Image (cartoon, rainbow, N blue to C red; front, side, top):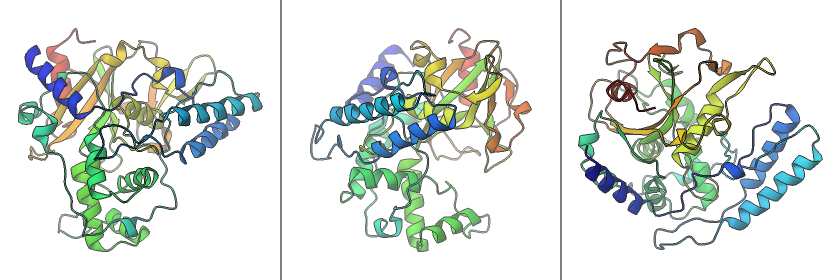
Length: 372
């Protein structure tokens, strides 16, 4: 696409996403500690953050109900105190964007999900100019927060607080995208989810529709490149599939949606480890420590169709990060995959099955060798 079209596309998205851009949060980052006491500090700060409920934007208002600056300051003070009390913690950087992957125990999903709630979602043609021109075709752009996710959820759950809405999102995202077996019956993971939250089948279908049409329609992450190879992980649910390190954005307890970079940092820190040559240990990979501001601008987006070319379009945004030759990374051991099979040639013919979510990005990199 030409520059004029890209500018129109970016202006449209910025108009829809008029909220504050939280991209530059380096000075507030809380570095993940690699010792038990340091991890405890992080959990304490997360728990404190989870009670914050400021800065939630109403659909009927163009501005936030209240500023979240005070919340940032309060949590930052707690981080400072905790760091001073723990002599083993050094170089602590506060992260107002730090979020927990765990789902709280007090989620009242059966109470919140009712078939009477109307599912109203933002159309693709409001999100993108001529969206079908993006089908399986990447382009470089600037990452922005998709606040239409928040707006769509508010239309459905206008009676929930920001904190409850945040908890609901993290809970609903645990339900798999596909809930049916080949014979049309509910699969085992769907049955387990339904039993865990005491849902009816109608409620389960509602959760699945909310996931497909709102919560899981966009994913963000990182495609690591080293030399002429790229790094991919095995899908834990579908062993034959490979994907970049990516995940879905969540809502913060304040009601704000994650920025794409925040999602990428959270997912990478959860899934990827790097070899520390000084400590001679595998450690969690903190993207804020190992990338520069310029590297974070290497962002590609695409609307990807289903595995067999179906017209189910899902947005994928990836930061393309080129690793130095001496950097070693691997998938977190908990994922139980073979770490010797994570690097693949960019020029290799991948077919259209196992790598279908990565193929548009590989094609772009082949055609733009000087991209990074």
